[in-house]
Length: 616
Ligand SMILES: [Zn+2]
Image (cartoon, rainbow, N blue to C red):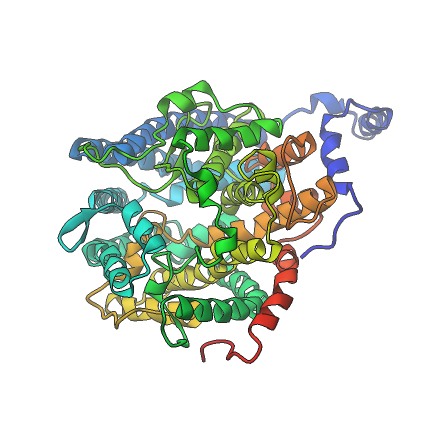
């Protein structure tokens, strides 16, 4: 990726934005005045710019109004799953789609974009965003849109209301995760893993319907398929996106092969089994083998969270941001969020994933979590509040409602992930009294855990299995009777993982992953976020803190807060490549990520001496 700017270069650029007009600036205005006979301050608008401004004022106001009503209904449906809330969410979903996909909006945005060269860049960005929003439900085909909204709502309801069962006993998703984290009994692990996949066949028929409906709306807007529509948010085609993801996997592959080898030996020893070629899926704590936690005892800090309350976890996360100089989240966040698990005796069902909602695109920010006092939820809370602070940073008059989004979709996830990474640094945890002062960190252990639990295997799930499978079903129209075989081929090829026993087409294991159902063709955003977070972290550690990226502490550093806020407050008003380059001096790449794990590579090669590397 990128050659670094001269030190401080990016800071210099951003600090320009706050400067008073200088003599040079006034002189430039004078030259423009002489040259064009126009006062540079009161630039007169062209008729086409006037027309675009009037149109966008209306579009922005309408967009915010329907966005708010729809978010409120979606919030109710996710925090309290009932037929009434589902019906309300379906109705507002239709209204939202009807506004975004309004034929008059599509036609006027297209017409104005034929005059693109005469319009301001910020105007063009909003018009293009309008078309991307419209593409989710173009009312040029209202019947198709209505069918899609109904099918999306049905899928969300099936998913949120599903009850996992183990030996006839109900168990929650949190309980599945806890069992896979703790159990050393392989028979039990296999049963729990299989129970977690039971949701797939129930979701498959409607997923097949959704695949066609999603592709249908994309085609209506002249995109070849739904996957292409989604990656258009990066200004990329499906092939360009897959190539970028494949390049990232190729650069990290030597490290992944070393980690995979180390992990399978470690797991074989733990379960008293012969060393396999591929790692059986139920040996790994995560249901999709996307993160490999719990393999490095020396980096397990759960015991330091014992006796803490869930409330303490989320307050600690909030303090991270306010100590960097971010404004606190609004009071309504604390009043309206749904942060803790539903009590076991409650009849209420809620979505057990973690989300952050920007309800009104202003100050109504809420988070849905099920926080428990352990390190996993500690980092998740830091991540979710990152979305909240991002929302807050760009909710300002200079950023129109249509552009109150990340510079690219992966920016939002990346900022959350960056703060998770920062919050996991040993010096930070010590400075906050979570780890004792005298805590003597085994640096290799922490780096190994970082790689396994949060970064490297995750790349092969998020750049490999997920986007390749979704590109197959959306862009290549893969037949449903091959979906499970295709899924396991990718899990095997990219991740080096195999199922505990053969998984035929009576299963649909991809559909056990929430995002396949409710956030389609989106998962590569998490891969982008991972690569991006290491770039931001590398810049912060080396250029601002002057500390090693593997062991640093952001706490209380206002310069870090200002630098980060300069990225966040822009929202979607500039191209993501420009924002990243101005902030870090680099283009997107795995350079910073590979540097971060360099000390680990030598250690792994030593450990794996004489072992067979890889699974071919
Ligand atoms: Zn997130």
